[in-house]
Image (cartoon, rainbow, N blue to C red):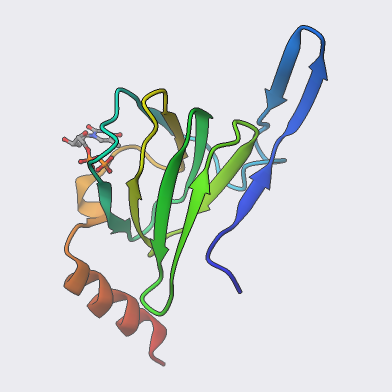
Length: 137
Ligand code: TYD
């Protein structure tokens, strides 16, 4: 199964423009405890480089586009995110990196928990150790 799990939000379009809806429970499988967003991003720099032990997230590129690399310790997949009506699920224990930000990129993230640095794994070797340990019987 692909690591790339996209959610299509409902949209309402008419000559005035488009309205997209993200509803708790219906579109988001976790209780949203935090929203953060990235903007003013540098197109030639990468961000992320971490996984979360417990946190679940959904990334929505509200404006512009960017690329994601997802890695579960077994597979690596990349995708371009550029539709404001689509959300990318970033599940727990998935290493992720973001790059190729367009100048107008605004990347919003819905998160299941408050910020907690102890939930981060920022070292890739440590990530592989933890994810492979979790996968073994
Ligand atoms: P960082 O993890 O480096 O960002 P990215 O994942 O995009 O590479 O976070 C940048 C800074 O912001 C860092 O000092 C931690 C802080 N931060 C918070 O205080 N609260 C938050 O909710 C987030 C996501 C980051």
